[in-house]
Amino acid sequence: MIHVEVYSGDFCPYCMRAKSLLKKKGVEFTEYNVQRENDRREEMLQRAKGARTIPQIFIGDRHVGGCDELYALERRGELDGWLNPEG
Image (cartoon, rainbow, N blue to C red; front, side):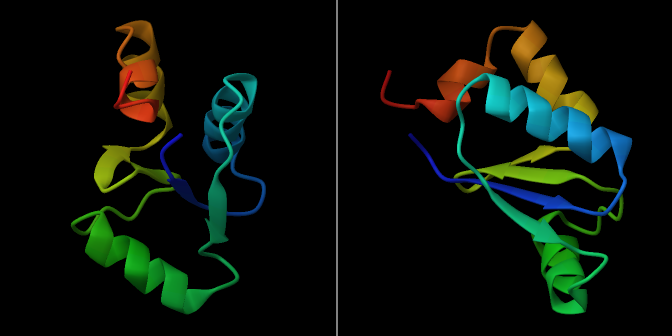
């Protein structure tokens, strides 16, 4: 399975929802708390082309966006393809 990264923060309901969906799908992910690690916030801003909201989610080298975009991929039936690009 492809590497997934989630930039998140404490007590963020959107972060919790996004991580919940990933866990439900059995996806392991690396989480970076941008509220505690300032350099991770700068990294997130660069990788997400200036997006400041959390979560910001990356699947492999692809920027998903936030929680709403992750759930939109799931509703369209595209998330599994992003997570398992080889099928």
